[in-house]
Image 1 (cartoon, rainbow, N blue to C red):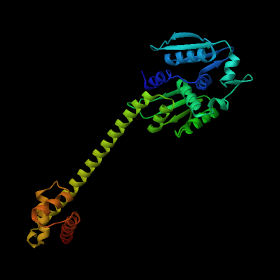
Image 2 (image 1 turned 90 degrees about the vertical axis):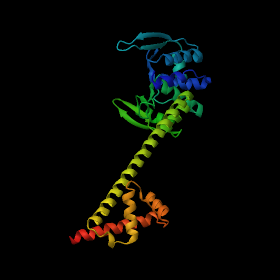
Image 3 (image 1 turned 45 degrees about the vertical axis):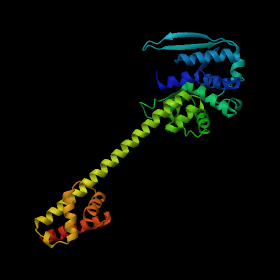
Image 4 (image 1 turned 90 degrees about the horizontal axis):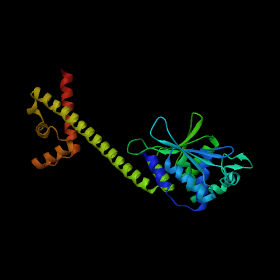
Length: 307
């Protein structure tokens, strides 16, 4: 099963108050039902279909007619739920239809407090939402809806919880999406998918740790490359001075630095300064060592310019 399917299966097992169930069912009917002489809902997830069946039965004492069809192109099934009784009462109570007119956005009582907003977003996710498995994909959660004003409404509900959702047009529909890992985790917590949150956080922490390790390794490799290039340049300068046979004319401190660089060609300046200080008994700092290598470079430049 996909991660989205796992999340949906988890939240379909939740118990809620009657008011929360109405808010959840409002989002479900608004986004998945065809309303004509009856209400027909098309669902491709078994646990979601069972949840919708249960909500109608428990909240409105209506038993939907359910039909199961096998899909032609894969091994799955689709589920069709038809509600024929109490239509006016149900659609008005769910704030989907008022006075025979379809409502793009439900009335305030559907989302009037934090628990009702959570329930509404849960129902919305069940029928229009999907979330990528953090193990295999980039972080991404989305809802696909049919109307721009409604997309703004959904985005506002999400952003009341600081989820930083955005909207883009996709063909004839509108996608509300969240890309930040922490915000996706927060959304799963909002709809009470707590097992999903633990899984998501475990993978997120692992990925973040792995990325940090890779960055540190890259930094370490870059530092090693820099040390190697610096040491190689210093060794070339030292060999140049020896080619000109002027070593006896050099300051004793410069000669010490030359000898130790050739003896420890892979040491960084910091490491080399510690080695020289310890072995000679004369303390030299990294800055002092760097100063002497600059003097060697200047001498090489002067000699080459004369040539």
